[in-house]
Image (cartoon, rainbow, N blue to C red; front, side):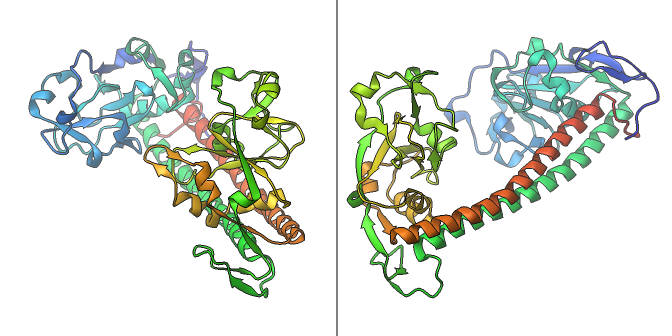
Length: 448
């Protein structure tokens, strides 16, 4: 890509050289920055669905602008209490509390609007400055590296105004600023479109994996097999030589250790918690390959029933959503592992192929049994009673093994495709990040 003719040292380590015609300015020298200070918080009754003024919060940011349709409103008296944060078109907003660094440019303002707490408004005070240009600067690694502040949209506690206004950036002529903003809007939209399409393809392959499980563990591999009524409404017909067993006829139960995160250490006996079942090891866990925190060896004496053996299953007993209800893992190792807090241990009492049953537990048919029984609103509880009353399908052992081999082979094929797409997405995201940083610091020339 084309570069500018001449460069000079910006004097800023993380910016490096900039075009000779550009200047380095601090935000406070080009912008008005204001957050809501000393304002009495709103009562719940003051959040209106319609009213004199929009009330903008960080949750109203969408695609770098404000989603006016979902904003709360406040009355005129409240709006007039703080004129410094009454909004204008082209104002740049940045969140400063909680999830900091979320950005939006005010556009299409059709009536008064103001800020709730937790947001700075950044407004141009010079004719030679564009807030749309600053939007892209704040998305770049130039801002990320500023005193190690934060990546765009990262979760930390607070961005202080007196620190933010000291941020210095490379400042081209306004015509170039506008050209850069338009160029990056166009290019990143193109990149994001490609990424979205690849993510949709990945989702289709994930759906194919789920369909493979659902078919194989409930109907088998032989399309000509004779079927029978399973006697279970949600299941329908199954191969006539397969069995349906109640969960509590093939498993016994125990509980994980009644511990907290403070009990976990770097050395001792590996321990898996319900959070790791949801986020990391939702299917199988092997401490020889998977990093697990540990608990003291003393638990081997006091809490033997919480210790897992190869082939034991562990269910998370709570979930934050319905889809996560029934998340589990099984121990695929001879290394002893403890189950941690908020877990239910299911110990096999009959012979079966563990991996087949794991795939069955991952089937939509099995998960729907649990999802229809869990209770809760924000947190959903999975109890031993719920698990006991679910049904498990068991083909003959040899057939279980063949089904596992088939699913593993198909998953290997599909996972290879998904992995390629994920690598392409990573490269695109890396290119997007680099492009923004290179353009806003003048390493790549945009024609005004």
